[in-house]
Length: 141
Image 1: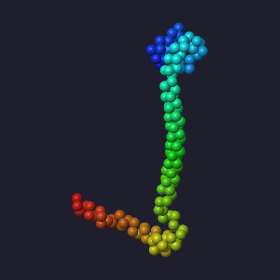
Image 2 (image 1 turned 90 degrees about the vertical axis):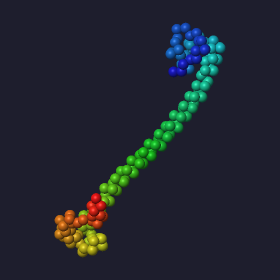
Image 3 (image 1 turned 120 degrees about the vertical axis):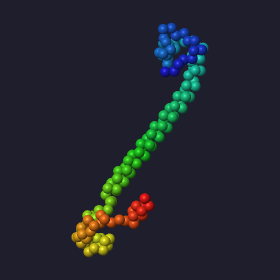
Image 4 (image 1 turned 30 degrees about the vertical axis):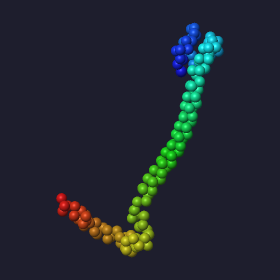
């Protein structure tokens, strides 16, 4: 609630400043003189401009908030889509086990079964492989 200016010296009887708002009641208005009403009007005039500015700011911020909500929603959908793509587009040899042409194209083996037989035969030995870039790191230390 707006504070009334002290220089107005309103005589409002049993009404207090806390109970007096800019939109004063008819009862309070009848207690004010013309000069006091003029001072009250002069006091309220700048508040009206500030009120309109704040109202415009609220509208602008509400619109900005709605735009940000839309952007946030789209970004959430993008995250869901990208997570789905990440989970479903990882290479998985089992996707190709029934596609002998693809197995042959990518590995040179005639089919999935031949690829797995070869893999199983070298699986245990492959744990002993030392890659060149790892060997160079160990020699530098």
